[in-house]
Amino acid sequence: MRRSVQRIGQIALPVAATVIVVLALSVGVTASPGGFPGFTIDGSDDLKAGPLGLNRQAVEGEVPVAIQIPDATVDAEVELNQIVDGVMQDPSGPWVVSWYEETAKAGDDSNAVMSGHVDYWDVGPAVFYTVGQLQAGSPIEVAGDDGSVYTYEVEWVDTFALAELTPETITDLVGPTDYPALTLITCGGDFDRAAGEYLSRTIVRGRLVDTEDAGQADDEAADDQGASGALGANTTAAVVEDGLNMRADPSTDGDVVTKLNSGDEVTITGEAVEAEGYVWWPVETADGETGWVVEDFLEATG
Image 1 (tube, helix red, strand yellow):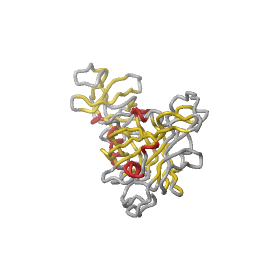
Image 2 (cartoon, one colour):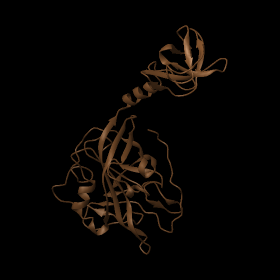
Image 3 (cartoon, rainbow, N blue to C red):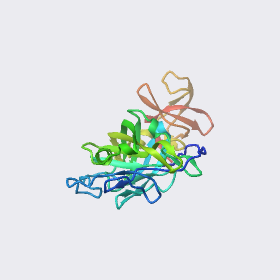
Image 4 (tube, one colour):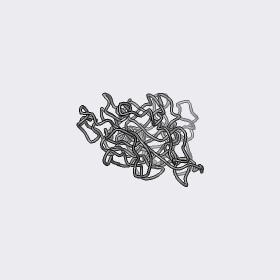
């Protein structure tokens, strides 16, 4: 998984930038310091433990550092954010996604909560501009700080008017879950120009379906370079068999371009291909001839 930031086209919108849900520990609607209204959590006696008063259990997981949502053109860094005095702090910019450390980590057996801007002053569409269009089953990949990758699939997407965000509803949305979940939050619905705010919040709920730990990712990367673990594009290799056929195609039926002998050095020019039970590498000889040879007869030299 790449950890680059892929920005959606910056289309100017005649609207104010707003983000996110605000959590307050008292009944009623509050606003963040930036003036963005959010939702509240009922401070009931049976919701005591945990920073949010949501009885979150201590479980293992990794701090998320990047997120990719191909179906929503999201490829963004994930920043660490906090909930201060019950208020979920805004992401620091239009292209970064916030993860709240008071919620579950990536891969935890509970609910990891993230937020992102839908649009932004003087920018236009921002990182979560199209997450509301996701469909059930769409993949969401979250990279942990140890190199692990957690893949979630969208279970549902819904938009809630501010009036619908009762304490009970908010607890259902951002509180703990009994399975590994990911909840994304952004603004949605109509924009109230007079108040300078969106009148709804869009929520995306995902469920963890796959985990690739850092070791597994390294192994797969090595596999991509062939069984030797060292062959790859733009590397050099020595032939280890006399009379090796270099063929025009990655096939035992391909025309023989030339024959190579033990000790001949070739340059690998691209990625390997599996065919007919063999791994074939595209190579170029010192004389400039190009073709394909079977990996079993090559040894990496650089």
